[in-house]
Every structure is written in C-alpha cells, then in structure tokens.
Length: 177
Image (tube, rainbow, N blue to C red; front, side):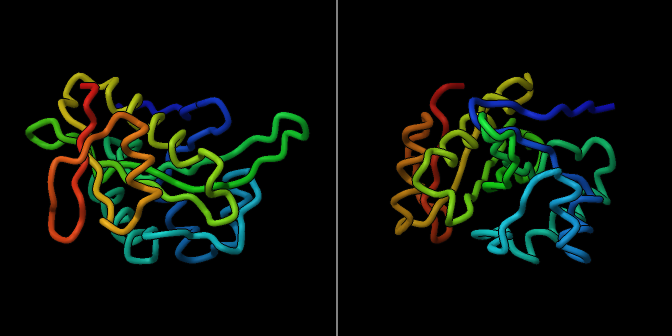
C-alpha cells in the first residue's frame, strides 16, 4: 500500500488529491473548501487545471486505485503564520508515477491573486524533492509555453534547464538527479 502524507514546505502544505476531491470539484465545487479545511477563491480552478484535467485525473485514480494516490494532483494551502488561516493558493502534481524510463513530469499553477510571491517556486521545489525520494525516479521534466516567461523563470530557479521543444511547448529537465 502506498501511504501518502502531506508535504510541508516553508509556507505551504501540499495535500494529495484523491478521487473524492476530484468528484467534489466536478459535482459540488463549493464543498472543496470544507474538504481542504481552507478558503477557496472564486477564481478556482486556475490555469490549465480545468474540467478536462479533472476528468483525466479522476480516471487515473479510478483505474490506478490506491497506488495512484500521490502521483497526480496536490492542493497547495498557505497557512498564515499569525492567524492560522488556511487558503488554497494553487496546485501542482505529476502526470503519473515514473514511466518505464523513470521519468516523472510535473505541472503547477498558482491562483492569480497569489502570483508573484514565490508560491510556484515553492510548489515546484516540494514536488521535485518528493519525486526524488523514490528510487525509481531517474528524471523529472516539465513543459511550459515559450511565451510563459514567469513559468520559465520558476523552472530555471528550481534547478531545471531547457532541453528542447515537445509539440508547441518548451521541455525542461531537472538537473539535480
């Protein structure tokens, strides 16, 4: 059995999504705040995490069972150090467990009102550290649009380097493995 714990970083807690989370988002999104014990902006979901992505991740959970837990979405929760208030700031995750070559792909998104505060970098660094802790992970990659300068800066500052183009996106690979 794959036991998943939340991932803690300096300012955020990453909570592993599950089929139950995704169903709530698809069917009764107002209950997501209760499920996460955090405030959820009306701008949620953000970026490329849309209905199609939710349905894809739900199908992965349904077909992968318990072993899928932790290899897809993670909710990024900021916990205010003074008030203790919890707020959903974004999400990140993997497109599945390491493939046969040990490659893991990450993705991430931060809500507009939380951008430019270092949360994307914190999410990426936490995901890289987590994926690296599995011995069958040989490489971590990410893709971003050539026009997304902020995302390119996040990846480079997190130890990735541009290694090519895949479809219409730039492909980055983490250099620390």
